[in-house]
Structure formats: C-alpha cells, structure tokens
Image (cartoon, rainbow, N blue to C red; front, top):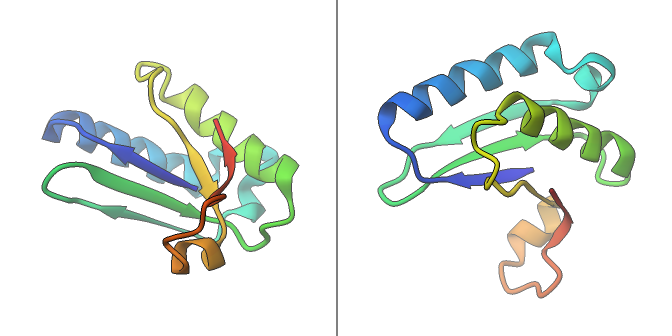
Length: 101
C-alpha cells in the first residue's frame, strides 16, 4: 500500500508517529497482515509504504487501508493505493494498482 503525501514537517511528524503506533498493534484484526513499513522523505512528495505478505488477501488489505484512513481523518483527500511487488518492478504496468481507497 503506497501513499504519496506533500506535507510540512510538523504534519509529517504527526503522521509518522501515528502510523508507527498503528503498525505496533492498533490494527486489531489486521495486525498480523502487516510485515513492514517505510517512510521515504522526498523533495516534492513524501511516500509511505505499508507492506503485506499476501497480495491475494483483498479483505485484509482493504481493512488495513480503511483503518489507516480512519486514523488520519483530518486528511480526507489522501488516496491509498495498493500495488503488488511485481507491478512496482514493472513501472510501465497499465493496471498497476490492485486497490485504491
């Protein structure tokens, strides 16, 4: 699940703290479905990626996305995209996103 965000440093700090808390056990039924996360701070837009072990578990993937989106309700315009590792490697893939919230 990838999320591109353009924020000032204070909002990014709040977001990164909250996402770490969520990944640390606040995902309820979906805690076992998260195997990693990374925050890439970039010049134009920052990127947050949450990794799941199984691309075929659509209900769990969408549940994680909804939970994260609920926790960050102050940013309603954020778009969460889920893409497989294979589609990321093939950057020219037309149907790159499997799910979007």
